[in-house]
Structure formats: C-alpha cells, structure tokens
Length: 460
Image 1 (spheres, one colour):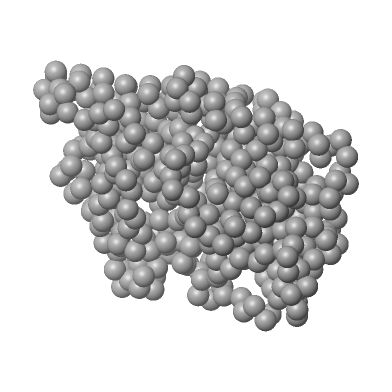
Image 2 (cartoon, rainbow, N blue to C red):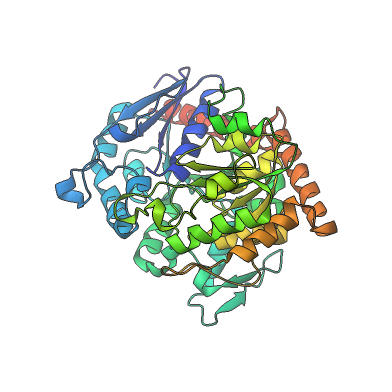
C-alpha cells in the first residue's frame, strides 16, 4: 500500500436511527479531515447520499433466512416482538462484510457494537476494528460496573467506586442484561477490537471520559450532531416556521425517539396533560410499525387540536430535531433520554425533562439530573410503562410542564436552565480547533496513519 495515499475508513452502522444517524455524521466528520477517505456500507432500504463519503450497498439477508418481512431493514420499521429476530439477522452480514473488507482493504473498520463478529472478521485480515457503542462514557462505565456486581439481588442499589452517588433500579437496567450470551459476545469482541469511539465530549462527563481513556483505547468524537451538521442546509419543516413566531424559551418540545411504543392510555394522558398545562408545546407522535400501530381515535381526545390551536402543535412522524432544539423559542425538552437526544439537548443548551423508557435510558437519566445538573425528572422514584396502563398521569405532566416553562420552579429550575446553557457553550468549544474532540479525532487519524506506515515498511 502506498503510504502517501489517503487513509481509508470504512463505517458499518446498525440499521436503526439512533445508531445510523450518528455514524453517518461521524463519517462526514472524518471525511472533513485532510487526506482521509471515508466509505459507509448499508443496505438498499437504508441508502443515503452523504457529501464527501462513498456509500456502498449490500443486500439485507433474505426474509426466508431471517424470518423478517420483506423491507424490514431498519429497527424503526420492525415491531417490538421482532427485535430479537432482527438482531439475530445481523449475523448474516458476516460473509458480505468479509468479502468487502478483502476487496477494499480499508485502514480501519468502524462498526456498531451489535456486530460483535466484525472484530474477528477484521482481525483475520489484519484490519483494526473500532467499536461504536451509540452510548456515552457514563452509561458505558456504569454498565461495566453493574456487570461486575451481577446478579443484582435488590430492587434498587448503588454501585461503589463511582465518582458520583448514583441510585439505580434493577428493573431499569438495559434489556441486554437478560441475554448473557450476547453480553459475553460483546465483551469478547470489545477485548479483540482496536479501540472505541464515543459520541461525547470530555466536558460533558469528564470523570467518566477519563476513566474510559485510562482503561481503554478510546477517542471522543462528539457531539456528532454539532460536528457534522454545522453548516448543513437546514431541513424545511412547517414546525420550524411556527417556532420562529413564538417567544424565546416559551415552548416545551416533547419527543420520545424513533423506537418508543406508548399504549393508547399513555398517549391520552400526555395529550390531556399538555392541554391542562396551558403552555406552548410541540409534541412529536411516532408512527408505529406493523402490529405496534396505535390508531389515533384510540387515544386522541376529541377536539384536542382545535382547543390547543395557536399554542400547541402535534407532529405525526418525523421532525428535524436538531433544528427544532436550536430554535430560540424552545426552552425545554421532554425526552426519553436516548443518548442522541441527550447530546442534542446539551448542544442546544436546553433544559431536559427526563422520561426514560428502556435500554440504558434510566442510567442516562442519572447523568442528566444528578451529574450534569441540566435536567428535572418527570416523576420521583422509579416508574416504568408496563402493559396497556398509563405510567404517568395528566396531572403530573401538566404540573411539571407548568413548573419548568411557566416559571413555577423557582431557583432549582433556574439553575438547571443556566447549567444547560453552559453545556451548550462547552459543546461548541469541544469541536473547535484545539478543542478536546477536535484533538481526539486528529489523534485517531494520526495513529491509524502511523500504523499503516509501519505495516507498509514491514511489507505487510
């Protein structure tokens, strides 16, 4: 290999919005560096045009092999009951990825953690595999500590050795903890991989970034929503025009990510709570997939949208969340605490109202509220939606919305707002020349270039 040619990085994201979007952003981030060429591999239904990045498509495994319906190539389009079927189908990518690696011979493969087999596949070809987890340093650190104390015997517990006193709940641990075989595969793959890239910036979670860097070969590449969307032509959406007409900080944005599944009873309580609050809001209601579909007449209060017209907007489907959060009118964000949403809220400098649902979101909530101090809880104690009942009632929702948006929260809410704005400033500095993320990205590029040069000299 000619040591003078561009460094070639191959990205292989999980087909799920929360993982796919940041990896697309990461590919654009690395491609913006001099002498770095990036490719991204995905399936036909997930193909996307990425300026400066080559997109390579490979077929999704045949439905007769996977057991999935035709076209179900993204977790956002897969019913909850087929989640494990989808994850199992990912193992069928091993041979196509191996063939692609042999053909392209990239200088590194950056693949999602849920492709654990890619570590051995890359190693066989002497290509370093770098893991993208989709989570931050805090949840990665905390979950590793929880695993070392497994099995957990009590409903709630604290983990010794954390820089902060964090209360966790057994029923709030990631669902993956119930799959010991998969956890073992992920652990073995991480041990065999070259390193980890994390969508975070040091000032967001300094104690936990330092821990990770002291115990792993790791680089911070976030906040990715800021790094690579900066300067992108803004997506057109009617909700942005509406927000531009509202007073600064007067709107609460309510969105629970791309994979949440609320029962009709909970959706109705949210609607009634937002109406009772009397405050301005934008509420994004996800369109369900397949058997998870909830018909609107099952939950939408009669005449709701007419009664809140002018101060409330219901969006069915997708919104450009990064652009929404950056609008001056948005002061608060009710979030499920998915890692991308936490990052995007921090970048925008808006206060978070936490409403975790699954995965590592209950752990992320502790970071937002107890460590960062930029959020308030929708409820105190532990609570989780189970079955068809509503976990959070309209009166509670209305009360919290009034408290944060309506000015009834006093000094505590003001502290949260101030802290949120501080994180927004720190995020911008992290990606500037000389910032912590800027330096980490450069460090990884230099290390991979040096590795390629050494192998070239050795004739490998």
